Length: 261
Image (cartoon, rainbow, N blue to C red):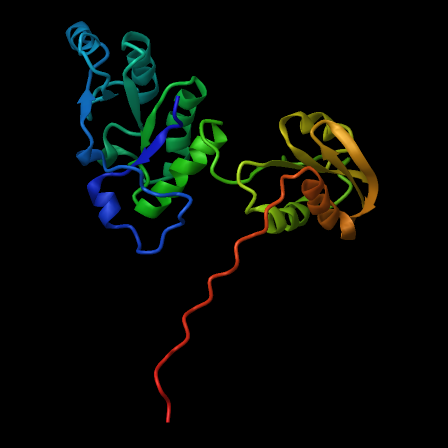
């Protein structure tokens, strides 16, 4: 199945800034796409949709008096699987509390994406359209539904951490953030860190005071590297495995071509 797409409303799209991250585009305008709104608790609506000769994009109607997570799960259970489902983070944007819209959207969409439900997403709880667009891609990535950038695996560390993990994670990210689709773990704990390499392509783990161990998948391939050298050695390891690409050249501002005198 194709990965979930990201839609915005016409009003959201019109309010976006002129310069957007090309890796997180608007992939459709909600009002421009035929969407069949279905109340999954209504047997007649479900039966009518399941009899349609062609697959459609289905969604919950706005103002449906149901919890969005439960209602989407019911829709997925009753709708013919040949139909695609558009997930909405809210069914009534005007009534949502202004605090923590990102958390609200992540809870509602993430739960369904992790269930394997959803072919498109529409975020409206976040009032800033650029933030809503970026958040949609972040939720898809976090749920494992669609990868559009480098993924980092890390966690708050305990007393066994042998280096300052936040600056270390920042240095790793500065060197590798352009490697889309790669999973890199930065773990401080010498006890639990190696076990968490299972979910990563490469790992950077504290091994001794001021020393770093590097992993390729679950395999420890270099030990006791001085922390001052570890990020460059990680880059070399990624190159060795054929996963490195050069970062894009920075876009320089256009020079003023006007004559001066």
